[in-house]
Length: 156
Length: 93
Image (cartoon, rainbow over all chains, first blue to last red; front, side):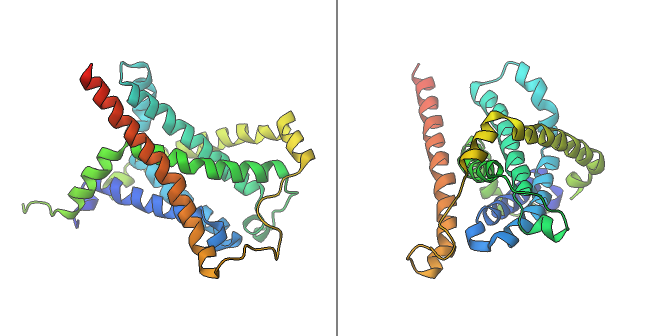
């Protein structure tokens, strides 16, 4: 496992695990309390940005891949990833618009609309099953990497 | 971390600009009749203050994670089953 920084797949695996764990922490405001939930959500941007940076090649190729001859599973996965990104953004934006701790701490305050409260709750809940499907679509990669992570790289 | 550091500033700016653009578009939902309808009707989520459920306090901390595991795990399992079924059908044809 010590060579993970030199291996793209292993780096992705570890960073994606970090992303999943931080997502689960952020998605439990009943456990953390709303103020901590809001600050953790701000920090969540870091593993999310890392996830996007580590999958940059996929992002670059995705639009070209969509018009290419690909399997139905890959096409679905392409659309699904973009949908997940939009729903994630919707949860983030609505989270800012219903903030009761983070923005007031920065001396920013505005009237909270019921619409954004509903959107935040609904989009945050919707992300979970969407994430489940996203994980299932990459399940063989997850299983393979989990097996590989325990193995040491052969000595040079 | 060499994979992460490669052109990270340019890439991050691109992601940030796209995300801000999409976010501004999403904020436009604010002025739709749908939003106005919800604002008129009102929305509340969860129990009122002091009206917590009558369960042991440690469960209040654990249950949100159980909810997450179920909401992520069930669609994951169903999708895996669906993919397996599709693979078998494809092989059979």
